[in-house]
Image (cartoon, rainbow, N blue to C red; front, side, top):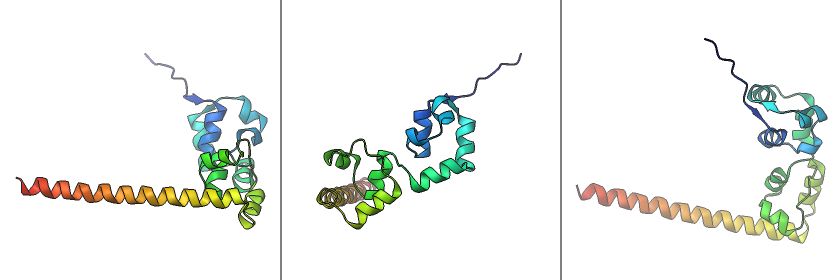
Length: 138
């Protein structure tokens, strides 16, 4: 007895997030239909021209804007850039002549990364000490 499996689908919002693109900038056909796992894999393995262009020039989703600017999404929110879907050219312009909020947020992000590195190194050192202690107690 054969069973008919229905393909796994996702909302266009989810597919756009997985593709790293800004949903409103995608073609209407993409925005209005569910995307199957097979279609997503095909888009990832051989992206159509519209996807290549969006990834290259934008507009980019907030998470990608934050990554390219070297700040957190929260940093964009603090700068009141919540709805900003910036193009690559706009991001480049911000990086070439950074406003004060961008300088501040990049410094904050650097501090956070340094603190996370310090904490991770401390945890790794403690793990080594704990393993050594356990080994000597055997």
